Every structure is written in structure tokens, then in C-alpha cells.
Image (cartoon, rainbow, N blue to C red):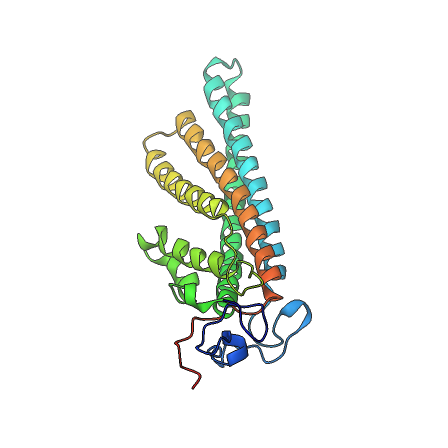
Length: 269
């Protein structure tokens, strides 16, 4: 039944009023409630805060991750081909010089690759934490893990294969748009699940590669590293899409009211 006063939201009280009209919707905690609404629905000096700037930074850095991965694959395969062709070279001195140069180029590329990945990880976690804090304002009822886990969950051994996904699941659900009746609109979760599955696969591939390259020195080891980098490229592309999609959801969600929490009948009396 619709509210007898606003005729928009679902009635939850005995006299037929919704949580907004009856005043029974629990207020947000003082440290989360925005003191003043700013442009686009974002709080001024408080939460929620726009994730747009961080999302663009993360997007640019994910693009840099893809570029450095491609460069690492290219230099690695070039070095691999030179190793494989070294036995057939007539001028061993010249071949040895080119081989050393190719090895140095690959080493520099992998160092840059690791640095870019590290910076991207830091910015991604900052963006992830901000979206989690925003989700606490949008709909705290679906948040199964606290905002601190948006940072700490990535660094807990073994649990980091699951905790960040639980945080992301709450963010995704809480950032969904609200229907005119005040309920959440379901958003397909394929992109969320695909992003996390590829991230886990990429991490496992890197760990396997680190263990195997010690026993597979030379061309075989470089081929395995190139395969892991190729998987990381795919994971970075999907992560970029995930960042853009979730940011867009929060931008749209910020202009809508928080989801009303179910009220206990008679609580307004």
C-alpha cells in the first residue's frame, strides 16, 4: 500500500504513512550525515564525497598499467627470441652485445611496470575506500563489512582473496539507484564478479610465475611471464570498466535520497 500522504513510497506505519512522512526513518550518524548538499548531491565538507576525480586518476593509471604490460611483453618476447637465435648466430660477440642490451631494456621495463602497478594500487584503494564511505550514506543496511576493510582487506593473507569482494558487493548494492517507491533497483552484477574473478586469477598467475621462473630460466621463463602479463592486461581492462561503472552509479545515486530503513510498527508513537 502506498503512503496516504505522499502517494509515492510504501506505507509502513499503522496509520498508512511511509518512513519519510511519519518521521520514523532513523537519522544517519552525525559523522556521516552531510551538513549541506553541494552540486550534484555531494556533501560539502562531509560525506558523501565525489569519487569522480579519483576515478579518473585510477582510470589513467590502469591505462598506464596496460601500456607497461604491453611493453614488458614486447621486450620479454624480443629477449626470448634473441636467446633462441643466439646459437645460430655467426658473430657471437655482436650477438652477445645485443643480448645484453635487450636484457637491460627488459629489466628497465619491468621496473617501470612494477612502479606503475604500485602507484595504481594505492590510488585504486583510495578510490575504493571513498566509494565504501559513500555507500555507508546511501544505504548502510547492506554493508556487511566496515569502511576500514576497504583498505585493510587487501593486506590480510588469504582473506584478501575474499574480503575486498565482500566490501565491493556492499558498495555495488548500496550504490544502486532508488525506485520512486523508495526501494533499490537491482543492477546486474556480472561486471563486479568478472572484475574480481580476473583479479584473483591475475594474482595467482603472478604467484605461479614467480615460483616457476626460478626453475625455468631463459626463454621458457620469459614466455610464462609474458602469459601472466597478458592476463594482467585483461584484468586491468575489466577493472577500468568496473571503476567507471561504479563511479557512474554513485554519481547518479548521490542525487537520490537514502534508502529508507524498515521501521518497527508503532515506533513513531
